[in-house]
Image (cartoon, rainbow, N blue to C red; front, side, top):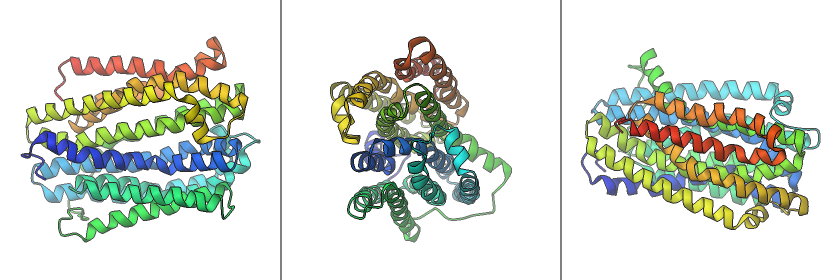
Length: 436
């Protein structure tokens, strides 16, 4: 594939399908656990898994920080025919991947219990949290490198291999979830071991890329400097911020629900949050499809090709957002029964949660996509402002204030309001003739 000269729409769709599959199957690492744990253990175990979700976001957010940041800069350098410079960005990402893996594992294992209570755990569910969590946090290096290498392998002209790696790991995770939890009766800990095994298999597939003759992902230490390190972190930080903001919001929701409704509320939120993981993965898939195409052509000053990719991605975002929102509005009971064997109390709370919360998906896909496009054209300041607005400022304020004024149901209106206001701002940025 020639990113600079081949038919740009055909290139977009060549990247789109494998990339969306890759990012979508990534969500299965948590989604598979949630479905099988909720169906075959109980709703308390499901609630416990939702407490761990922010740690999942931390690991994968760090992987995307280094993966997207390094790979976008690498693609831009390759577009300028600067191969060694591009390889130096890959090297920076690998080195910092090792550093973050060690730091996260040490801190989380040393202070596991207070951290879990701080982000929403309670005495009712802590036993399940600890059984899953200690195993999960030990796998920090696996999760960081699997999410990071997925992006690098795809941007090195191997989108199908990136897709196969994620699919292989996701399928293994789901199959082993069932085997470990049901026949082997390993409880919630079985879900954690299955997740680790899935990441190992994904990494094994990615490593085969380094054995191919077309591999350009090679360590090169000659151009590692503070400027290149800063570029990787600056470019990838919006992706990291999205994941970390998601972790913060999940924790705030869990804390509020623990204090107002109890673990039943956390379970209901776990259902909508796991649904959001799928939508977030689809959104990231569209964004990551466009990024290497936009970055390379923007660097080569092919502005018409950049605009063509941007429009194609925006149309894709609107189609997907409408489809997933309608599905949730029409089938809330189906979604609930997919995750848990719900009693009347949980069913009543969860149906209300889904029908209100899913409205936010109409705007969320486009918000994430537009933010990713700003990264690709090196306008990370706009991307950061979108991320901060939707992921931290508005969500943190609304999740604190809405329950006070609107009662316990007010918490479900938080994200629709957040995404609507963010979309208005994002559209204004584009309308101000910012060249995408």
